[in-house]
Length: 99
Image 1: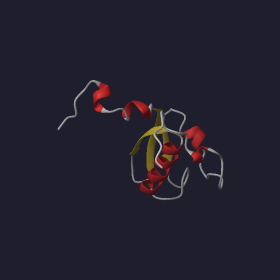
Image 2: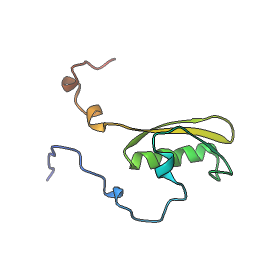
Image 3: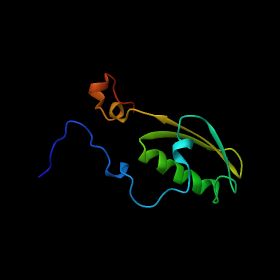
């Protein structure tokens, strides 16, 4: 039977399981702005790397600003966000939905 929860539960994936990452995400997702280079920092296309970086940020509960600055480089910055604020109904936010 479905159950109504008072708050959103923590992800089971926060626990360290599986294989170790090839990237130092704790450093790169620390809030500072990082410029990363293909062949030096990652060995895939910048497009493929941005997908992996976005997933790493999401699993840590972070929002990620990310841009391909050239054909071989990306810049990224992670930010801590409060997801609960975003999930409140419009009536609880004192605003109406825009159409």
